[in-house]
Image (cartoon, rainbow, N blue to C red; front, side):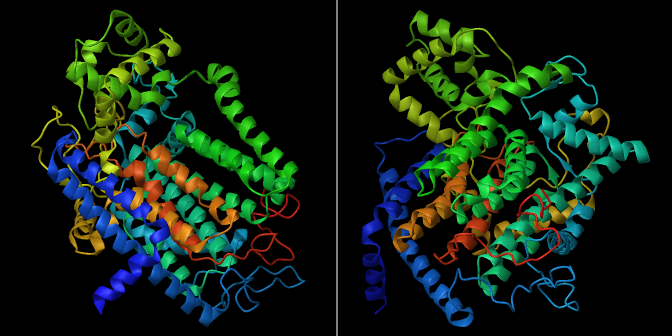
Length: 622
């Protein structure tokens, strides 16, 4: 009987069986490379591994989809059709007297309201922040990553990254540097202690994250997500320790995630309205402001936003709305890439980031060839590479490490050479050594493709390596550069409270079944592919697919990361790179549980007066 049911499940997904099969092949290859630093295509163990992964996903995906659809059916039976307008009993309208919108009785102070309305969002954010406060306090004074400490040191006038004192290098976004530095300066000015400033920044950072997440939850409720799954998602954000620990940690990736979530809510509202909201002045201003925040908190954010907006042209929307979206994308790209460097940077003594920062993976591919075949390069190719790259051909070959690009890219600015000549040399070398390029790419990105891997800073691309579990590993104590901000706030031994938080993380990593949620590959690859699988199975409309575009773009750019496996010195962790996928993944599970019917005006946030942060300028926060 069980075998028959398994066969029936597998047959139900024949039309999209290729997707779990492809995922299995990718996971098999990635898992092999993550533990060996190379892929031996002649090794039978590789194909056995691929086959096992493919078989598992071919069974798990149909099972998950079947459970998901049954769960949605039960929600429909209890609450009515999903995606329908919330009933009057769910979202109360505002009285003519202008009283605030209330989604829950006054006595239920701990119950979330889930209403896209500024006062309601602040109350929901406060409720969530109460759940996070213990972590903020236990991690006192707060968590600064190695790179963040260097950023803050530049704000306080130290010479970092080879720059002159007082200069700020945009290798790490200058907006983050000013934000972090200003809050820490304020705390230090008031108390005389940098620790107080870091604690203030940590608390503020976490509260801003609560506001953004509350807006996302309110959107899901406004679209008619049933109370059961909405409560589950809310509980996940409130009580899953990775969220408060990471959002209380200060690094550009978590700041980017806050801006991304806030912008994504507006993007969803835009798609729900068939792009009609884009011509409303208030909405447009807020949308552009958040878009710029996403672009200026992390360099890759600009490309995610621009591509997402440009892809809206394939939707079935009015031409004038598409035109505005394209204009916004081009305008923001020009502002960030041209206007700021030409006008603002010189006045603020900001040094533009190095050109090579965007091509660390191609550099890693060249370094693999230089390591394995140092003599197989002509003089013209070597000259083009040596003139453009921070390190010479010979240096890259000596310093190459299969799991991280940092040894062959470093932190250096080099304005000589031609990008065209580099591209020609890169292509020429790749045509001679295509397997080395593939091996280099798979090795450096294998942390997203495997459950176990070797520590990133091993020095030879060959087995055997020690293995570690590739899980979310948030820092629970500071890892500051002792020569920069560490001079102002020296590293100290982790406190008992910080050790307790780290112990909690380790417990989650070890508990069977629960620890599945802690693996990087689950949220970086498996969940996105499953959600695509579910969309294809449900034959959803083009608008339903468009809601997932930013999520998949974040995933795509994740595969350009310079390191995806934990370093042994614990100064860096791929957790921060993949954290946005965890946050967005939980949100997109909620979106996938929504119905397919949406009013042309988007979610019905009922109001008559007062401030609603996603309405027009005359009525809204914007």
